[in-house]
Amino acid sequence: MAVTVQKLIDDFDLEVLVPGAEDNLIKVQDVNRPGLQLAGFYNYYDNERIQVIGNGEWSFLDELDPVLRKKRLQRYFRKAIPCMIITRRLQPHPELLDAAQKSRQWVLRTSMSSSRFISKITMYLANEMAPEVRMHGGLIDVHGIGVLITGDSGVGKSEATLELIRRGHRLISDDAVDIREVDGVLTGYCPEITFGMIEVRGMGIIDITQLYGLSSTSQEKNLDLIIHLQRWEGEEEGVYDRLGINEYQNILGVDVKRLNIPVRSGRNIAIIIEAAAANYRYSKTARLSPSQIIDQRFADIPEREHSSERKSK
Image (cartoon, rainbow, N blue to C red):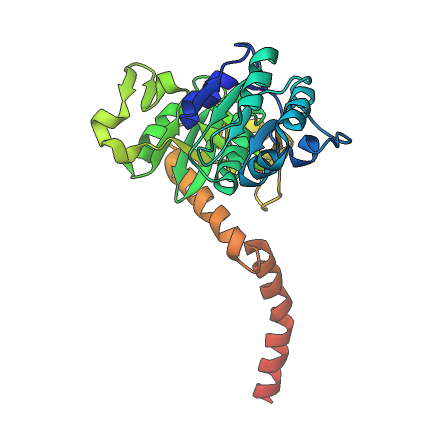
């Protein structure tokens, strides 16, 4: 997982002051402000980070004698770095450009302030370098809950998704979902080539945006709940959950709640998925689960009976 310097230049509209090696890769999400290194201290220096020169570093270099400045910069550029980025459109010193050219190191420039640029690039790198996996299934936004519908081929995933879209919910992806993990949060995306498309057996590929409008789709959604559709097997009826026992599926190190829903002719799967999403949202805010409420009601029965006996006396 890495980002090329050229992609960084394109995405942030950076000005190239000194071109470097075309195969340079950014492999570390953090950035470094090399004030200590320019002062000659290299302990714990990570040269694999993006190097950011701001007002502080520029002013320090400007105060140095030109001979000493040249010496410090030549030593600094001896170690390969992904790139150096100068903020606030500051004018680099000639010694810096000369040392970078001799070592073929990228020097770039932006008009943003150092704090704003570091904040944006840190988030950008975290997203670009996030671990990613592609899963078979459909992701849909149901009542604000990101629901991943999985199951064997032909079990009815796309048909259920189509009915949910017709009922006003939004499609993120059908058949294949790209999932990224950033800071313990899973986010699902649609592969660019299939955005807004859904395949229904017997009909082929349908363009959802043409049938239901752009509001029926979304670019991404956090993954909250997995609904796994299984063909109904009569002899296995007893294994399906009736009491709300929690089951989870691990994706990229994150546990996601999973419900196994049996599918058979006549069952309205779309309504069940709607209810599951609404129930999941309710469970995140409710003080007690439905099973706990039932247990509490059972516990209250003897007390109510005892109270009724006292009143009758």
